[in-house]
Image (cartoon, rainbow, N blue to C red; front, side, top):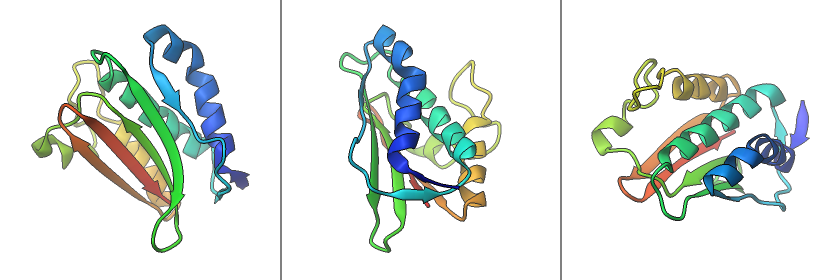
Length: 144
């Protein structure tokens, strides 16, 4: 199905709005992104929901918690969706394992989320990339 990327962002923001307000998290979301996605809308929503949930977890002890959703095109003109937070970040040795099924850095985590996200993106012939700086935050980029 074809749909605007901004619709995906708007839905995710709507779903988390009260939770974000309760936790004092600032959500930055593009209102202008003319990218049209050709994808299973519900599956991509699930990916974005999982990424935002992870970001919210990482922001637990931050003074100015912030999540930024963005949309851009890479050098090869692929559409990229990004979720960035200014949370605790992920240590380098753990960063390589975050997409491994059942690997988790949290006591209450199942370790399924990111590996499922990667599978969904892969099923759309896309790629998932994560970069993180401990103490500064994490950014996950989906290239579709």
